[in-house]
Image 1 (cartoon, rainbow, N blue to C red):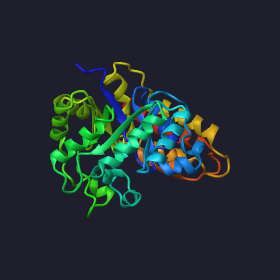
Image 2: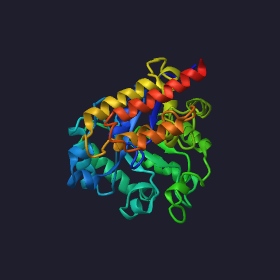
Image 3: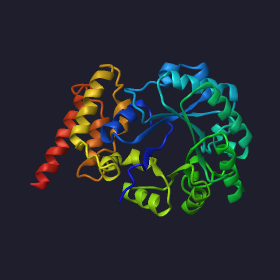
Amino acid sequence: MVNQNLEFSIAPMMKWTDHHCRFFHRLITKKTFLYSEMISADALVYGPKDRLLFTNEFDDKTIIQIGGSNPDNMSKAANIVQKHGYKEVNLNIGCPSNRVQAGNFGACLMEKPNIVVDCIKRMQDACDIVITVKCRIGTDQMNDEGFFNFVDLISETGIKKFIIHARKAILNGLNPKQNREIPPLNYKLVSVLKNRKQDLQIILNGGIKTIKSGLENTKNFNLDGFMIGREAYQNPFILSEVDGMIFKENSSLSRKEIAFKVAEYIDKNCNLYLNHDFKIIRHILGLYNGMPRSKIWRTKLVQRNDYKIKGDKVRFATDEIENFINKKIA
């Protein structure tokens, strides 16, 4: 029996989960929490707020992730997020990249929990929306108790929801890609945290490839939900299982219906002459993964054909692959 209070989400991913991507994912699943790319607090305070926080439609399952370590700017950023209509803001305490470390935020802040506490308190003073944290199970030489102490200290501020990537962040020696693959997964440690802090909502992240395995790990380790990252982007149609399998609301569209709705979206949002369609099309290239002629479908989408403008490129390519699939089935 699936716990229908369970939470499922798609991870924030730099250069991937922009508002076009979130529009696409929302076509496939209505019940999933969708995260923005990480936005630095400084960018929100000093940069183009409306562009950075633009969304196609508001719902209470779209969450903005921010990064930073300056309490003043973090509080201003949280207030800006609230004023733009969002109901939840998430702190990135998990990104291990050198660029993020140079800005003194991301996973390196697990080693500076007092700064995180100061930021959270200032954010709480500045806004009324839900504040959550995404982190790793530690950094470099941090032991298990160090991880537990970090969560203890942060939760004392009133934070109730932690999304835990069940790998350490190795800040010295590994790049971001290696940090997603080399440090071993430790779901058991996340489970121990949940047993110690049963009042917290603990969401599992890291290494989950299917909805079924996510559900199994959530149940086996007594957790409150799970988050999928790159697999949801590279094989997005797995998301069609979410609403029915987890929430018993089977409202998913077919691949063709999804593709045609994206085509309509391209018609409405792309300049006719400037090839802006690829900013949208790049997000749907995995839609037919695993199906016959999916490579041909992808190739047709990325070609620049003057006679197939705007959404027509998607319509033509989709009709072709669907006709082939239907003939093969027949």
